Amino acid sequence: MSTVVESPLLPVYPPTRVTFVAGDGMWLLDEEGRAYLDFAAGIAVVGLGHRHPAPLAAAHEQLDRLWHASNLFGTEPAAELAAKLSARFGGAQSFFCNSGAEANEAALKYARKATGKAGVIALEGGFHGRTLGALSVTGQAANRAAFVEEGARFVQPNDVDGLRAAMSDEVGLIILEPVLGEGGVVPLSADFVSAADELDALLCFDEVQTGVGRTGTFFAWEQLSVRPSLLTLAKGLANGLPIGCLLVAEEAAGAFAPGDHGSTFGGNPVSCAAACAVLDTIDETLLAQVRANGARLLAGVATLPGVVEARGAGLLVGAELDKPAQPVVDAALDVGLVCLTSGPNVLRLAPPLVAEPEHVEQALEILREVIA
Ligand SMILES: *Cc1c(COP(=O)(O)O)cnc(C)c1O
Image 1 (cartoon, helix red, strand yellow):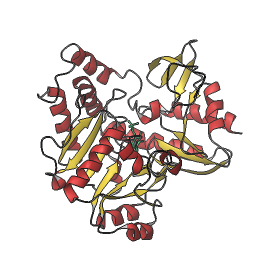
Image 2 (tube, rainbow, N blue to C red):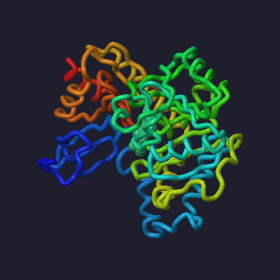
Image 3 (cartoon, rainbow, N blue to C red):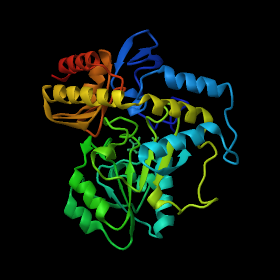
């Protein structure tokens, strides 16, 4: 096999047109010194905006103190972060890793160990990561095709009858995103989530994208009145430093013993110190701001030309277009607005949670120009 190698990077991502060299709050700067308003936040990661002073100072301080000690020993930031997450959740134990996919791998292993069952129900259009286990429960057939033969039992989002029909004695885990972040920004209904909660399986919410304030509450489940047994976090947790987390509710504790799971880098002190600062910063005032600006963005997006439906929660907003979304994202980038797609026809907006009304107006103005 002979191929022309054009880049030293494996070509798993589409070619990029812009190289960013700096960030500040809501703004990114490219090599030529052009400023871009950031309504992507590194795919819903940089929740507090670029170089937010709180995680920046916490990470700096930890960099100067201790980078790594291994999980053979305790470190202060990991213990402190676990305590803060438990308090937010209402009683849970944490396992720290480095990414969303890894957090979901931990959830899949935990559910198997706890229930002795390998069957999983997941959602059509759902996304849980690129590793083999996470991919096997990802409801995007094209991404699975070349890599996994047998996946989960996939159910349409919000199809309560389909969910009940998929349940059987072999199912130990139901894994759901409260809002499907990659599958078109589809919020789950409270009825559907309650029906999932009533079935005799562990319920895991993948809050890798919806968690850490993105939807206007710290966890998205707070708006659904169903607290799951398992919950995964990653993207926004350390404002851009790599981290993932599996939370196990106290009621579901006890399945893992020493040796059952682990990660060399998991619980990295610098990432955990930054995450502690993120949690301290996401208070009720900021969450109220996310809800208000999210409502403003959602209402504005609904009035854009060619928008079939606007949906979302907090500052995770999707606009289903009457045409492909990628050309709109490309045109917006050309005039200085960074945004995302979510599936072929959905434009996704996920700005830093610190966005102000004037940023929302500015983004809507640019979109109105380029969408037509
Ligand atoms: C991004 C994402 C993942 C995967 O996270 P990685 O850090 O890329 O492994 C999993 N689940 C959801 C809902 C995501 O949005």
